[in-house]
Image (cartoon, rainbow, N blue to C red; front, side, top):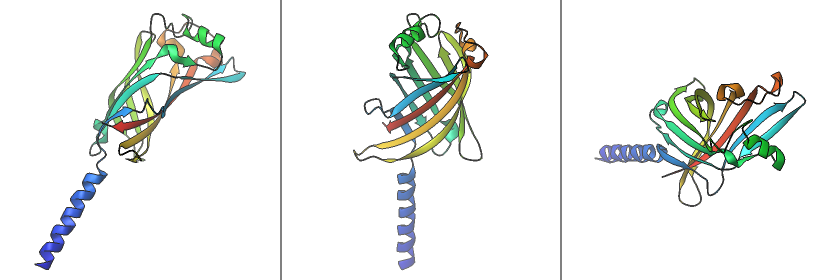
Length: 193
């Protein structure tokens, strides 16, 4: 009888632990707390680095803990929120030379598949639509952590990087060979819904 009670207690503990460890679900980006960033870095003529960010974007990801390759993410960016810490340059970035925000006010990313590597990191492959052009891109992604927050919610955070060729998205401005590509760095914290 004692063995049966002990076995039942161990089984119950295992089930409870598995449920506690199950961090699957749909996570909305924490826009209210602003625990999210999309930043970019591009060479200026090969002489210096220009850094900037998009201040307004939203999205969600679905995480499948049992089968992470079945996870997905979608993001919508307000391209007019580009911010390089210089008002006149930001006007230029919003113009037809670059983002052309009067015609293409949003950029979107929708994942198509997730490929895991041996180190637990993932490539998220999906369609990025920018300036009206849709191309497949790969986000090199790392899970930063997950767990309960102090307000009774459950959070999960990721970092991702990718590099884009300006010409691939119809950006006509030519700043020379050193400035043909832009690096994107994404950091998001999601709250489970």
